[in-house]
Length: 162
Image: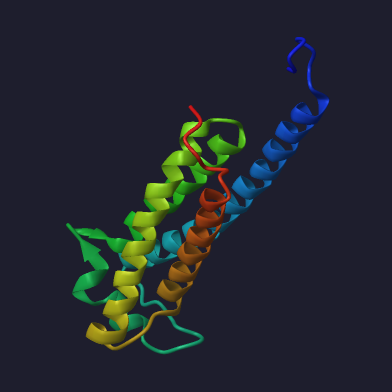
């Protein structure tokens, strides 16, 4: 509204454009998280069933996935990853439908996922000395999520707007 109480069409149009742009970005975040979720579910199923994961691009999946770092508190690390990716998917969909708090919760969640991914890549490179293509794919997805979230945050589209 402007000073005389009339609706300002430029302001209304700008808000609609911002919502449309944010909606699209949240859909991108949701799609990326589904890719990570599929990867994590595959690794979880293979772990639970005791199947050996076959690397097709690089060798080292067996070494990484059978290491002591592949299990946390008795649960496959991939299961925790699946839960994290599902949470990102859920928050992105909620944010796309206008739940602002959900968009804000993406910041710490994706930040934590990114930090864990960096740690796990470090472990693969310098401790286990082997790489798993599925783990690297997950790290790439998490990095892409972090980049999108950072761009949104820096552009002011993820500010505290409760």
